[in-house]
Image (cartoon, rainbow, N blue to C red):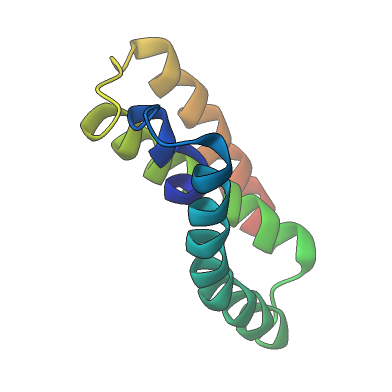
Length: 96
C-alpha cells in the first residue's frame, strides 16, 4: 500500500481526482496479493494479531526504503531505534 498511498507526493502536478483514481487502481492490485496472503496465513496457524503485527513490520521496512529512494527523505537514527522496538514486538508476538 506504500506506493498506492505515497507515490503522488512526487507528482503534485497531477489533479487530485486523477491521483485518487490511480491510487485506488494500485491499491486494488496490492489487495489482490494481500487478501490471499492473509487467508493463507490464517489457515496455516497464524492468528489475526500475528498477521497484523507482521504486516505492520513489513510495511514500515518497505516504506523506509520507498521514502529514502523515491521520496528522497533522510533516514534518521531515531527511525531505526523505533523499528527495533517494532521488531521486538514481532519477536514477542511469535514467541511460543
